[in-house]
Amino acid sequence: MGRLITLDEFIIKRQKDFPYASGELTALLRDIGLAAKLINREVNRAGLVNIIGLADTQNVSGDEVQKLDLYANERMIDFLGNSGECCGIASEELESFVSLPDIESKQAKYVVVIDPLDGSSNIDVNVSVGTIFGIYRRISPTGTPVTLEDFLQPGNKLVAAGYVTYGTSTILVYTTGNGVNGFTLDPSVGEFFLSHRNIRIPNKAKYYSVNQGYYLKFDLPMRRYIDHCNALNLKLRYIGTMVSDIHRILFQGGVFLYPNTTDYPSGKLRLLYECNPMAFIVEQCGGKATTSTGERILDIPVHALHQRSSIVCGSPFMVDEIKSFLELYQEEA
Ligand code: P6P
Image (cartoon, rainbow, N blue to C red; front, side):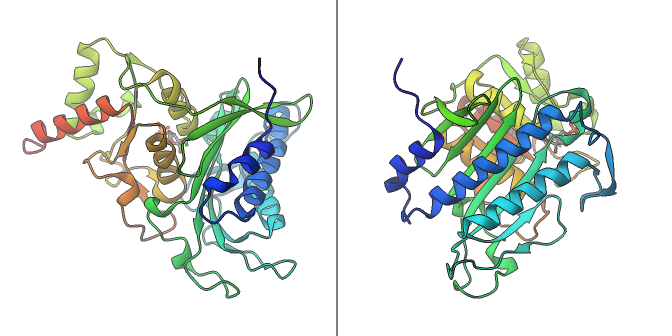
């Protein structure tokens, strides 16, 4: 077995891949990794420490906010603020973006979008949850206050994206547009070690992932595709945490669907800090990511921080097959 490589070592070695390489991304990813270690500790202790259960607030999308959501949000903001490379953060847990003051006379060039604890409704039943992040280069001039436009960029402008899945092990997966690598946390030494080099998604598989309980709320092409999956006896795997469902698909193959429904005609998941970062990662693994009406996720214009979108992503053969169902049944819809 080769020598273990830590996340920090890997980032520094790959710094040349990052077009603005001057250690800026290294600092950002290092600090996200640090925040993830603290979030991991609290997620693992949640059953013991009285921080389980609903906080007395709701986030901007009306979801009940779990106390761990607040903790994760605060840690990400604390550590990203320390990096000196981030001038603003948009978060699922915050109605508007947060401006971070320049420190040590650095003029930060990046903004970060986060879902600090995706799938938080699963915390109380010990099902895996995750953190999602995306990194954009700011549009407004450095040294000036960050603006809303710095965040309202399409996914194709992301310079880096990643997630942390807090499951049977804690794994940080990220891309800077040059492939995708995964790092597993060894809690005994508090280090993320390279564990999944150059992740490539299988072209097709016998798995699909959708909340089939909403079948009657999907439009006709999606219902017909689900019928097709059932006719092929594909295996339904659905955790209810987007990070976990997509993480599984990166390795086993398959397709994750959260289509438009009658309750969510524009889709339930958020474009800026859920769909775009995950779509960037899926595409960098050789997969595809579209809406349930066939538009490429990364090309969708972003008009609002909490804008929703549908998503169909995973193995390229299967995403293309879904597109053929759209063409076949769209006019009947
Ligand atoms: P449903 C978690 O709340 C989340 O935002 C995603 O992580 C997950 O894929 C989806 O919602 C689950 O939604 O409607 O199936 O419970």
